[in-house]
Image 1 (cartoon, rainbow, N blue to C red):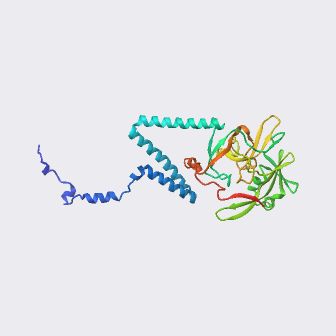
Image 2: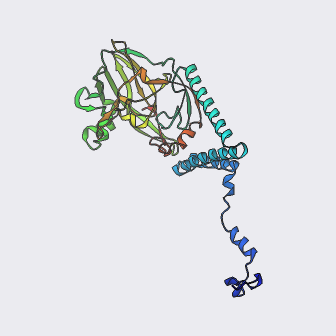
Length: 350
């Protein structure tokens, strides 16, 4: 067997060609690669979240909101793994379990004090503008809900509207004239409804609903347009108008209702209905919506909404905390895109 000394070992291809490795060249090449170590710095991530949040508020671009959600999960992971390095896996898991336990204790404790199973909720839509903002975190209380009360024989027939134009029956529509005309904008009846909504009255079971023209204000342009909206509700010969002192209620729609696709609804209680069997129901309406919730009907899906049983209510808004609710939005991808109606709100009647 032939043995070779180190000095006799075959040279590398570069040595054979007379080339030598230049350490400075390697360092320069490495410097061209992006330095991602900064992503391991929680302070940088928090600053990035603030910057992205400002961009999201200014532009409304959903991508910024998605990036905020990713940053939130990333910083939580950083804090967790940093804790495991300092204290070990067992201690970090123990501390995490204690933190979750305290959070649950605070949640159920607050629910007990405030008499509601959901003491906190976030505003996702713009249906309550300008009085409640998207991104607000609301504190709920479940003791009572203030709204005018009327007694009715039944609510079973509520949902089908007899539409009268200048006192004459024009059509029988599911939900409302508004929902009916949303699918028939070119019909002569609906053209008259848009131009002269005050000529139309609906009879919906024990309810009579009258329309007017509402101002629709666009803050960015400063312009105001006008369109049909509910102006009054009549029950037992008494007319009721919008009253901003009525409580804003949070409720869960039934699964067969149209609003069930969006989760909890946060709308103002317009009136409370009492039936002979002692049951109580609310008629609700978003301040930024032109019609009552019971008037919304989707002909394609064949779905509408019913009056809200008191039992379905999770409470009334006690307090609103601006911007805090965005945390829920950013960790819920379906809630990040800005929904319809956030660029305007309904103002006074014409």
